[in-house]
Image (cartoon, rainbow, N blue to C red; front, side, top):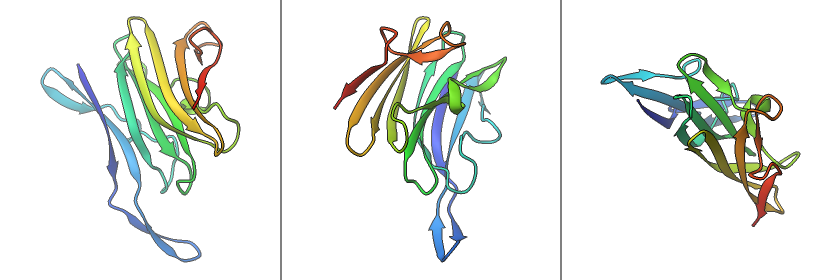
Amino acid sequence: DLFVAWSEEDGGKWICYEGCSFWTTVDLYVSRRSGGTWTDVNYDDRLSVLDGIFTNAVSSSLATSPDGGIFLAWQEYTGLFQYANVYVWTWTEVNGWNAKGPNDGLLNAYEGESSSQNPVVKANGQDSYILWSENNGSDSLLHVRKWDDAVDSGSWVGLSNEEESLLL
């Protein structure tokens, strides 16, 4: 099977609250090619953790998981595009879409306000990895994590079971 993920704007709409502004919403979509046919594998028509008119799901990365499904990571801006978060979800034929980790699959190392960006997921045999960058306004980090089913019913852990981050 072949999977593809892409972001698509909705064409925009006028939002009026203490004045009016024109906003576009960017949602994430996934399709699968199997047996010569394309089919959607979206969650509730589109993938987005944040509901509402201000979603902006971009910079997706996709990898085949060891169970024949996929890992999908993406960057999604919060609220009025103030901060970016990175989310990881998985999809299988049997289980559909599921967040990979706590908090809807949210991966942010800093507590509070920070922007996480540029996720990359990779699968290597039975192991799955994610890499992403994060900035809290004063420090920038590059994170690397490995999925471990044995830790807390599944968790992203550092490569040596410690948190792995590089200060940039």
